Length: 457
Image 1 (cartoon, rainbow, N blue to C red):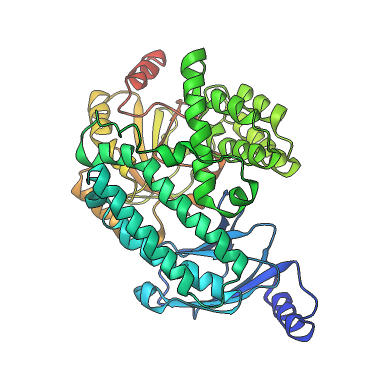
Image 2: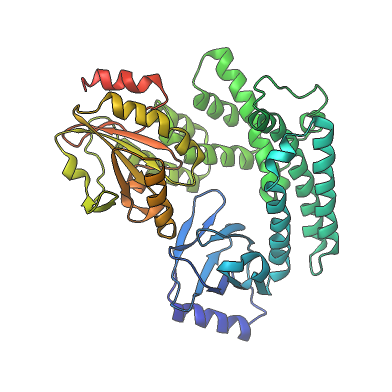
């Protein structure tokens, strides 16, 4: 983040020399009734994340690189999806207690970004009906999402100030959104109707199957298209994994590496490695496959750094430490306080559905190993604003073990050093404070007891 004085000077230069187009953008704003916790801005691919300084009255200011086109400004509750181009000067204001009715964006580039805000409102309204919509039969579901696409296209055509180029690309993006919803239907219908045997009819995904998956312009512009391309190659990779009896992650790397387009290949490889390398059963083989096929030097540097950090998490290495985390039972607890016993760590949050589904299994394991040489430690990475939610859930669900609250949610050193990209995440540490498994089996897995038996716990 640049110093405020430097940014103020940059704004002044915009005004004095508007004929010179800068290679960056500036965002300013003010949040009324801002909740506790950080204001962050990050890129879609997670390659960039920054915490913004917010003054006492809720004001903020920052410069953004336009090498990245899509950002998300997030206060912990309200995400704002931003399109950034060189020379944009966006001013963003809203009341955190009434976000939908008060969000306003002004300045150069505001037209596109106000459109994105309006589009997001429609998407949020549809998502509130997920159970009802995904429970519909095929015909009714397709009718519903077709009507939604039409309403979005109407919003786009009636929105003032948008360029013809943006409108053309966005209209294709809305259609890709429609196709994405077709792609999601079978899986979501199974979930909401509890009908695990459900399969869509032969023609239901005809439009998805006929899609051209090599459109570089749309891949760079449309996250909906990018998601469809990713799903397409994931399906191919899963078939390859089954046919050749290889791990799914290695199959995806092999599949993506064969893509003709360097842009699409490099992006899929990077996005996959950035999120999945930490979960690989063979991190070195995963990394070597990525490195042999990725030709983007910037991406390679990021994954190389991640790989080196993961190597520090090998079995037998000293575990990263948490220090002075708030203990629900009172006082503060550090990892060093637990030396002499094995420590099974559960990194979770109150908002995480998969985390909560593991709770009954975790209770069973805790009961089975009660009195043995192991501590069960659950670390919540809820934001400070959700501290009371954490305390309430621990009490209402009668959570056992050692219940801790991390010092800085996702940005806590313990979380970052373990390269945790998603939760729940389970870690087993031995009695000397060394790593047994940095990505241990979940309580619901039979493999966990096998791991404990191997350690003679």
